[in-house]
Structures are given as C-alpha cells and as structure tokens.
Length: 214
Ligand SMILES: [Zn+2]
Image 1 (cartoon, helix red, strand yellow):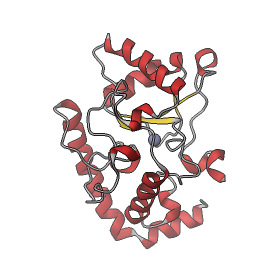
Image 2 (cartoon, rainbow, N blue to C red):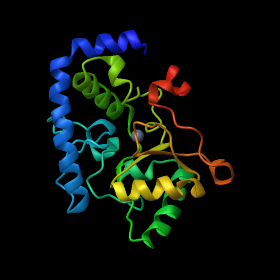
Image 3 (spheres, rainbow, N blue to C red):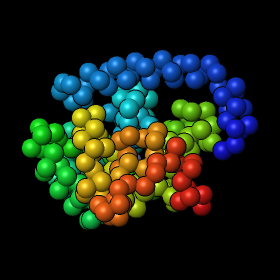
Image 4 (cartoon, rainbow, N blue to C red):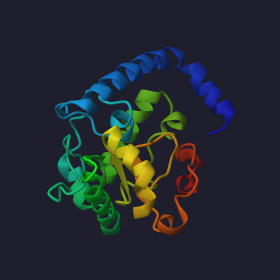
C-alpha cells in the first residue's frame, strides 16, 4: 500500500480509528491481566482479535468451528485433537513441540491462539478485519487472503502469552522458529536455515512480504 493510500485510509476513518484505539488500549490492559491469570472464556480467534489486542469482542466469533481451525483458549502445541493444531505442517509442529518441551523447563507454556485455518475461516477473518480497519488496504496489514495465508497452508502459528513469545524471540531460532512480521510478535513460521544462520530480517508487516503480492 502506498503512503498516499494509507493517508487516505487514515483520514477516511479518523472517528473509527479513535474508537479502535481506545478498544486496543483497553484490550491491551485486559490482555495483560489475562496473561497473568486464568484464561478467559472462548472468544474470537484471529491475529487481529487475539494477537496483542486481546478480546475486542466483535460478536463475530460464532461462525468458525474447531473443524475450521478455531481453538479454545489455552490449547497447547501438543493438543492433537484440534485440527487447528494437528493440521499444522509436521515439521513446524515438531519444532514447536521441541521448543515447548525445553521452555517448560523455564516454567513457560506454549499455547496456540491460532494455527491452521480453513480457507472459509480465513475469509471470515478477512471480512472482519476489513470491517474493523475500514479498508481492504489497511486490513491487509493484519490478515491475509486464503490464497496467501501461511495459516491456511499450515505453515504459521500464533503463539499466546507474552512470556512464551519472549522465550521464542530469544531461543526460537535454535529450533528454526522465526517471527516474520514486526507488527505480529505472536506469529511464527519455520525457517530451518535459522538454526545455523539466525532468523531472516523482519518484514514491517505482511504487505511487505513478497508471498503476499500474488
Ligand atoms: Zn499469524
């Protein structure tokens, strides 16, 4: 997206953005509390709604089922009974489990906010994001299309709990697990070369990723 388009998007949705901002701040506070206490009841499952922004409750969390990849709160990387976990790429899943096993020694648990998603689920998230952010261009910074999403192909996982993310940002490369986007500290993919060479440079957001240009 160009700066001009971005500026237009911003000016078009100033009021909405102010509201979103307040929601985000509120949700961030709630999210912090949530991470330090018991998990909340099931709510919307997506990068947008559950990443760092916690539960912003759009009421749109009813459509996606576990068969589409939705997972309840607190699901770990070992929960094979959920397609959202079980349908991840086997090598990614193994790397996650190896890392989670070692992180457990540090008292850290890896939970999955979102893993594999059906194309229908991804489309639902995209529609929600366009509604939330006010334009397709702005939504593209946060949610990919079913054709390009690494979640739909089973190659990406959104990790819950800031402590687990912090552990992964320090140790993930040893397992080939890399953060890909600067704006999504919860989103990890497998980069086997990282074991020897470290993780690649971060993209600012998904719009900078050549894979998303299709
Ligand atoms: Zn993700």
